[in-house]
Image (cartoon, rainbow, N blue to C red; front, side):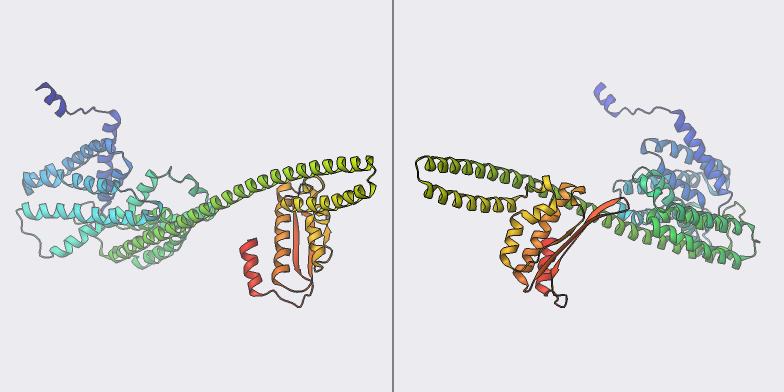
Length: 484
């Protein structure tokens, strides 16, 4: 029995920060209600935004603040609407909003799907919470429902939607502020300019006369231009900043009584247009974020592939260098052995045989060194790229083809890194081999090493000597595949 009691025992510790949170939430809802309209119900936006910002472990305090807010408003209404309505309509709204937000938070979106996720959260919250509220009201009120029921439902749901879509994206942006801290550094000057322009236009809305609906509409349309610019620059994050700067100035410029059913027909059409604009901005921002994330992922993949290819190439070059070093040692060993053999033959009086062996040994030793230099140009590390090209095995191969004119090599490549010189050497050998294989005519090789500003580099041109001849499509394709 004791174990059963311990298993069902609930532990709830009252935290001062929770009490403060409940008080701030209740006061925010009470204050915002004084500026609210049926067509823009700010407490609904504050409710959804608070559930996104506040951790789930502190949600009971938000519920406490919600009950305090409704107690202040609806206890005086018991005599008019009944105790059942006051209790049910006050206690069930926040749990439904919590359920909607919790289900959405269980499937947190990727960077590219955030805009659509926010739209889903906004639509669900703006539909279920006011629908429950109005259903309870129409079921429990003693007064018959108004004749214009559909109009009242439309205004209520739209008012919740307009407030939620204004505050929820900004709240979610705040909750994800550490996900990508570098986004604030992109387009810093244009972003600040766009925000300042929207703030100035919003101030102008406050200064216009209450009856100047056309002027306010024009100002709202002007504000939509920097809002679109913010969305293009930052995706859904730009839309999250732009939407409050679009909707809140228009709302605060609209007169409100602070009482239920407060409505202003003059700005209702403009607010409907702004709601559509807000949906479009979030959808556009989601698409832009998707393509930006896709491009960034592709860039990272290409960078990773390039890094792996470079690492593989460097490993292969190290292996070739070790192989060339081993071949060099073998060649030196054979030269030493043949030299001893030549000396022994001369000591025995076989001078003709010794001279013939020495001549053959010298010729084959030279050919062996040339072939070893094609495996890896070890001389490049000591004497540089140009001398490695003039005295290595590549030069001998070009001379034997009788189709490569003497290279024109200018500048000092020794100022470049060995890795860069080696890459140029490999590319140049491959390019000449490709032209000798697929084209006819003489081949020219030109290289110039130099410095431009603080950067050093080299330009290499391998082509046909006859400027009137063009490369075949096959040659171009092979060059792209083998040299890219």
